[in-house]
Length: 273
Image (tube, rainbow, N blue to C red; front, top):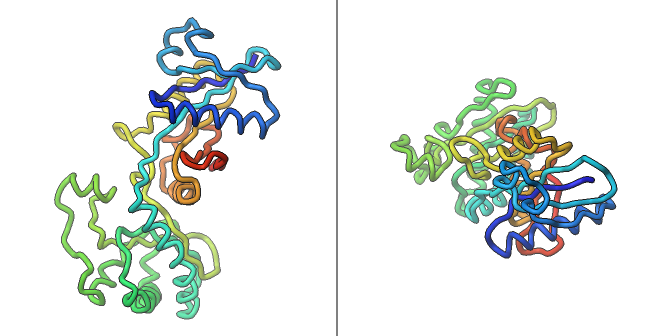
């Protein structure tokens, strides 16, 4: 018998998400999982405390998969900045090519955007600064070129970080003045986005709670584990994927597969990993 364990959220909205995912998962993989309460299926108190629901299928004996929901910390501000820079990156890549700056680069999602009148000046300044400063970038490390850009833009913030309030606000001790660039292997003039994990995931004492529960499910005997995030699919899918290269792999080590379900779109689902 094959089962999927699910931690139940208190709201009816979350219950609906579980059932939507179950229906989608059954259709995609040709399964026939049914939903039961964990208290009705497992006498083990440790399992009952961790999970509320059990999905049962009567075709494979003794094997079960664990499914855990996780919360995203993505805000509308992050979505707006990501969309802005995602559209700007191809233009910046072309500017780098025009400056004969060869290589693939990644920019850590900045905390700012530009007024329409400043975009062209930023593009020209960015390409010229990176052309001069690219030796700062060792492979797979990053450098802050913000200080070399700031003089061209009077409104560019320059003050140092002061306290933990800013860490929680920005996801780093650095101010929005930072413009972190990372070089990746590759020969083409290309620029992509990376997103700081604190802008994407909810952390509890430096850990992702859902992952901890999936680790426990593996110890209990789960043959496969699934982490299901809820968010805005069209906006959040790329944001989550762009944060994974910067996330310590151990923080998601309990999840064999990661999915994103749209809280509004009844058919919106995507596989992240």
